[in-house]
Image (cartoon, chains in turn brown, purple):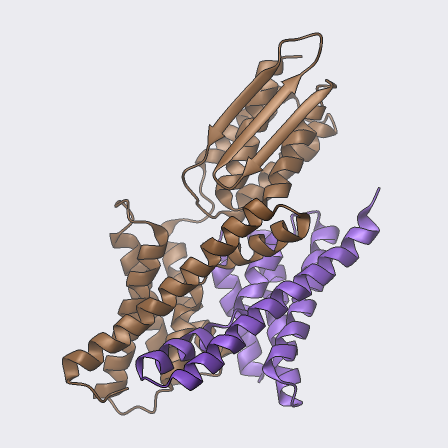
Length: 258
Length: 139
């Protein structure tokens, strides 16, 4: 068996999963399952949200150890699903190691949905979250404008190196500002709290919240704690952005609109 | 209320697309979100306080997510992450900030506490369902 390829496969699988937003224990589990197909004695994996370590070894061979630093985070749940399937079929011996490695490389490069569908879904998402919170049709209409603004901010900042929570903050400032401006200038009976919180819902850190909870339950306090902080910081920046947007408009108009 | 549940269904599907959930599971993810929000609405309508209705709603979301994950052989996060989103207390966050900048510290603190309690309840419900399914999983 080609042990070098095996550790590369395990590492690539782990990297894709971690970047795409899998829980830490799932990444560790998948990687050690792949490594265990070698039948060697030592198969250790250690994963934290910002890095992966793995060791494969036995008395018969030199130990192989890899370290991988993970810098980006790019939520794509379909990749977790596909890597999961590949590791399953690799462990069932229905897929050879070479094929698995090639497939993983393809998965790493493909994107599930194109940018137009993504943007449309942001707009529909903002609108639908406003419906869910009990908004009227006029709220929904303005929320979809807000969703469009979110998509616009994401598109404009896509090539820049701005961190995602700063992007979220910019988005929430824009949402709050336009919403409060529209409610101020047009008397349409808009429910401002439903409109603003509904529009900001797609920005909420769902992945970080869920993974923080599940990692902590698993006993991975380091990863769980890191993700809890991530969730809290994202939520706090969105809230702060809304506050800044509201205060900014009230400042421009001369106070007293809130 | 039906309008709101349909809204939840559409909202969760569109968010699922931005999170990259595969096409064949979009409808499943949507039903998880819709059922969760339906439970929350029904319980609020029956007069439950918001913290406990959120708890039971999350319980429903987590149960459905785990069942789908077992049946369809997928990672549970596919449904859990997207299904939980409608329950995340966005309105509470807004109200905390709103009353903070309008200098109403008492109401701001009230909504902050409520938001934190809801977050805690969501975590608790996920813990419970995870543990239940883990009992049956042991091999």
